[in-house]
Length: 345
Figure 1 (cartoon, rainbow, N blue to C red):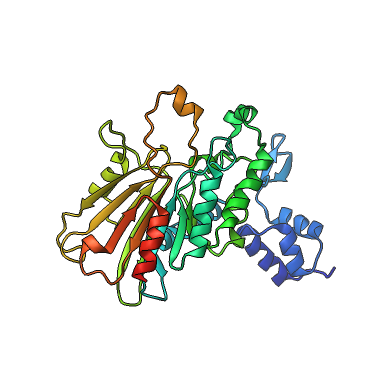
Figure 2: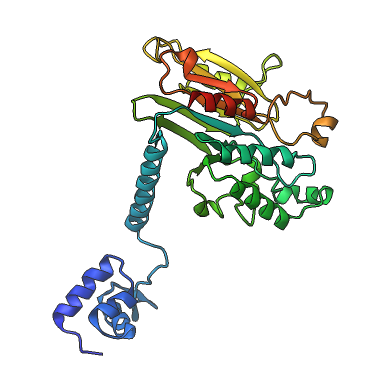
């Protein structure tokens, strides 16, 4: 420990004013923290006590200076804004302009005894084996009952730990995920995020609450894809009402996909802007995907009408199309879509 000079004391005063910790100042000056505290007490303003008979330095506070708090919040805002800008419309570059197929997989609930895991396995293996076919998940990979619904594990044979293992097994079973959307059941997983936990091991890194992507092909063709677990809006006349409302009043994408309500349907809406699309007016394909949970006690007791047309819509995209009618072709069967894609490629 060295003796402090007058210049050291001046520098210490500056650092203390800047809110630098005393231990850090001691390290910089190669001295003991007690020495820093001693000199700090001499630099501090004094206040009298006991009717002015005694003076003591003003107490320090554990709170950070307001300037430090503001800078920290501003840095957080800048990072959040940068992330929002980067994810506003993520470009996805395909290195070949051959037609592709996007299989949009609905609520799988892989740990539920009422889910059709055999059909899910067939679909995932088909995607793996079909060139140009890719998968995305619309959310609710497993039940993952949250804290308020933990009691529901009593009604299924799989435990919370089993859920994590099953989710990991079925996600890793497919090698061609383009993205995975977070569902409400995925957010309910308190102690472990079942998808994000092993996402770094997958070929895809995209796992978000909302996916907004722009498929780009070498020949200049572009296809906008918007995916969210649930798009708000209900109608007794149209099960795709939430997604259709989103298309009509905001989201201008070639493909708009959602799930959550375990019903399936399709709407094709023409964009009123004649400047969009290949031949005047983009066709927006709203795909409401169903669920692999084909046996649902909750739906039965709630008297919900079965409208689970398909748990997996597959959209065949042709980058060489010259009209909107030929650009995107949605099919309820991924097996038929694979045949069509093979013939087109």
